[in-house]
Image 1 (cartoon, protein in one colour):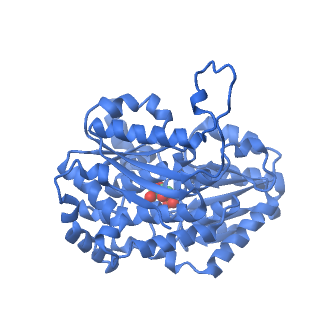
Image 2 (cartoon, helix red, strand yellow):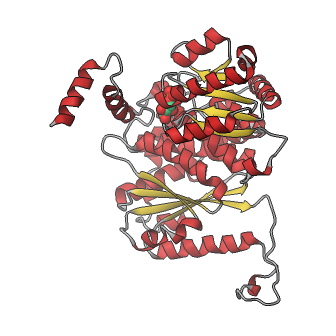
Image 3 (cartoon, helix red, strand yellow):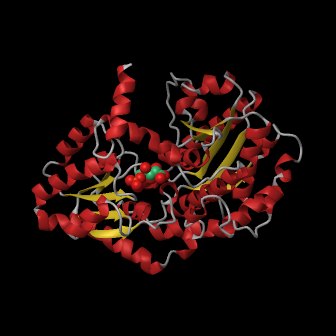
Length: 449
Ligand code: PA5
């Protein structure tokens, strides 16, 4: 059984046959990906990554994960953007929502850092780690990202002070380029265990490399099942699969059709399970960085439902009609909670007695879909049979493949991100980084005007 895609409540906003009409363009995009003739063709390592992953490689990741699990009560994953969001998305989707409170002795607490420059965040993190047996997974492809490097410098120092330099080497792991960057230099000098991020896999497509796999394994989740889900989805979305049956092709086509032909400029990814919040954050980066360029691109937004129906619901129902909605729905939750009887029935909810909470949730989802469609919001539905490693693996590859196709349909290079450099250049100029002297002078003059 695979995850399913339902686009019927989206195609009703398009002229008949529009999605079918994309078939030849989608085929061209698929061929360009397969033959590596598309823009960004040096970043296609993700395309057949699942089927190229060997059991031996997964065992080597698991072995390092096991060492961290044995030696650490807390593991801090330092990374940002593509070196962060995939791991967090999978760990939060699969983990107990109250993991850090329930004192789960089987698994280390996983914390994320290096993804912001909040001084309070770092002060509170280092205070929490004081006296604790903690390890660090330092993830940076370039090995020079400021947020991550700054955090790693603090954590390395603290880890060495608390455990001693020798013992720290067993609990610090670097995931970075094979040769370049400060993270590589530090790892080689100190003798840390390392994993390589392949050159041809961009950050936002790297969750199935050690970037995602190591933290996920440390958290106690089954990386073999995750990869197996991705492998099955690689087959299910291959270019020889009929267009109408290929869910990545269909998703790519319908979103581009909504964008170009129905004026839908914003896609809201919505979930009805708070655990999926970071799946949406990962998806936002995947689509935002891949498609938002050349002054084009669907704006990727996210809402957690029903929570945000009480905040963003008004806008979605009645605001500017430039949005469409993609809902990720989990068919069967992992737990069962029945609505209890109450003799007094003061809340008037005895009509729900004996029902599963999920039944109420599903009716909220259906009611919302009908209301939003009536309000002019096309609805795409992705359903996952269960929330587990296997189906999350499927979901990851489904979105990656669709993203590659969709970016090519939009006629951009989906695999670069030149726009993210602009803020860094200004920040370095403002901080007088060596090598930025001319930029520093220019920015100071600009600010003085
Ligand atoms: O997708 C991307 O390329 C970015 O989000 C990067 O992953 C992010 O900036 C982190 O870069 P690095 O891994 O080089 O530290």
